[in-house]
Length: 179
Image (tube, rainbow, N blue to C red; front, side, top):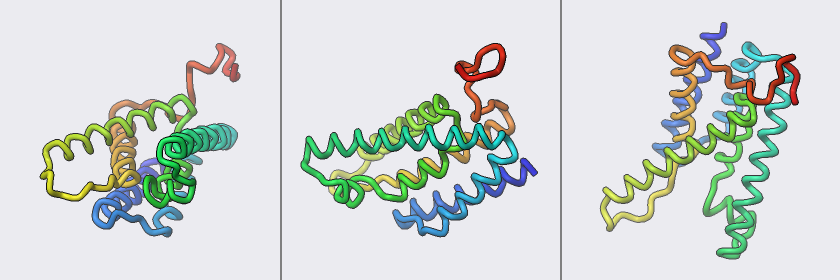
């Protein structure tokens, strides 16, 4: 069942990647499929209390990230929250972050977000440097690129690393309770 849940989740992530790369948009039903497959995947691997805690803490981290982004764009360019989602960031990106939040313990989520965004920035920067200067400014298929990276990470973890992304050993005491 665990392998089936990984295959289904990877299939949805692959479909989202293709849609975002091809059309720069991901339809709403893909987010519903992602929610269902993330739930199926996580329920088979971690206790419900851990999943709820991960979701709530990581959703709070996403909220803090959004507040920081909005504050930056508000101070720098006078952009409203509505304009932020209309011009700088897609609502799908936010949905992707919240839906995938239960997959990681908070420190792992921070590592995942930082690492994936850094890889995307480097790839986007390389494309901009090597691309034609006459092309219009390209948009970044952020949710699609993160879906691709997440699928690769989960697959590599299943067959190579075997790391438990749901728990943070650094925050556990010897007795197994949270500090």
